[in-house]
Structure formats: structure tokens, C-alpha cells
Length: 300
Image 1: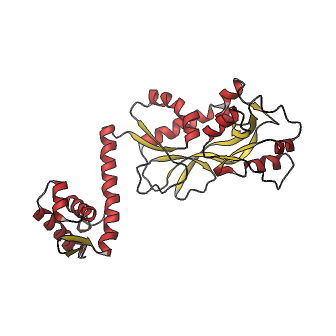
Image 2 (image 1 turned 90 degrees about the vertical axis):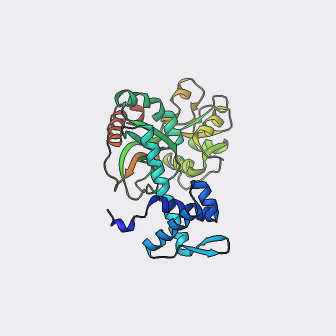
Image 3 (image 1 turned 135 degrees about the vertical axis):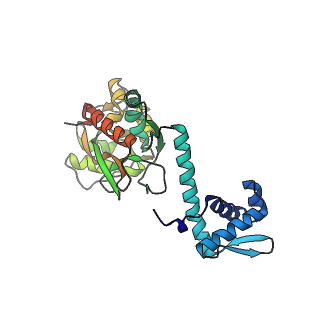
């Protein structure tokens, strides 16, 4: 722990944050249900404790000094973390919440349908899900872990590998028949993700035609691209685990060849520096067992 002299009282920090946002001691006092004098004393005490001038007083308004502006930015982060911790505690008084950042497709098609099984065996853990598409800094967030697609390029985290993704070229049954040659896809409209514009090129390279990067209609998520393919908008490269139902029902059909290894893998990641918590340990062990028992996620 830092020495106590570096830990100002929370009411003083709240007074500083309110003044920075509202501009006057009277407005801050109204918001915090205090007197204007109490706000002024809190600010003076904070400046005295830190030995730094935080507020410039000009006529009827209060302005933060450059040092005060930098400080209040960090203070807001700390106050938000404390509020988030309190919300988490109220949601589960036993302290068993797990805040997980997920990718939309993986979360909707694979993880969400299985979470009921986790709840049955770990009733003490409350799982809270939020969508994040790209790596982020765990510091300053309430997330305990995240689902990551790509390589081991997320700094400061530990990894649990979930699967090496496979993709398959598919289309609606009425769009085209089975293509005799891989290069025949170049005669068809192609669909692709904004974040994976090189997928068709890698697919063609796998079939002996390197150096190509065919254009295609762009989508920001697999869900909308899959619907586009079902409705005959073009050929799509889709992870096999996302379209098991569509393939089984015949709404999508393979157009040439079988599944091809994709560039990235799926991982569970969590901050390396964070202390071990029971909810994360339970979820990690459960997820490891689920992956091991799912043939769709374990390509041959």
C-alpha cells in the first residue's frame, strides 16, 4: 500500500471532480448536498495535503490548473473503479462476479448456449458479458478476462488456447453449384469481413494460387455476412463452428473443398498482473473442459 498521506479523502476527490465538471463551488455543493463552504474547505484541504495548487479562482468561477486537470482525469478513473466494484458487490454479495469481454460471433453461437451448464455447476458465480471487438488495456476496466481472436499479441496477459479456427467457403444453394476449380470463385460475388480482407487471398493460396487478393462486399460482423450469404448475395468464408445449423439445414452449402485453417486462433486471456480469483479459476477450468469435449472446436 502507498503511504496514507497520498490517499486523499473520497469526499474531497468528489468535490474536486464536481467543481471540474460544473465550474462553481455552489453548483458542486448542490450536486453533492453540501454547503459551499464545505466544498471550499475540502478543496483547500486537498491542495494542502498534496502541496499542489489545483484550483484557480477567477471572479465567481473556479478553473483547474494544468496540474489539476491532469489529476482530476486520474481521479475520475479511480472513482469509477470504486463505483464499479460496489455495483459488482451488490450484484453478488459473495463476491462471485466474473466480468467477461466477448466477441459477438463466438459469444452468441458457442459460449452463450453453454453458459447454462456453467451456472448449474457454479451457482456461486455471476457471469457478466460485454462485447469488445479489439484488445484493450485491462487496467482501468472491470473486466476479469476476454475472448480474443488472433495471435498471442495482447500485451500483459496470460492465454488459454480454445481452438485453431477453420473456415469454409459457402453460398446459398441457388447461387451456384459446386465449383470445379478454386479459381472459379473469381467469377462469383464475394463477401468478406472488414477485419479480414485477406481471407479469400489466403484461401486461394491454400488451393495453389498465391498472390491474389480479390475484392468483395464488406461486412463488420459474421452474423450479417452469414445472412447475406443465405440470401444469395455472394460466396462467404465462414468459421465452421458458426454455421453448423445452416449447413445441416441446407441453407448454406460448400462451394469448393473442405475447411481450411484460418490465420488466427481463439483464446481466453486475462491480465497477468491481476491476483487469482475464484470465479475466473472456475470459469477457466470449465471452459478448458468444454473445449476438450467439443469436436467442432477441435479440428482434426
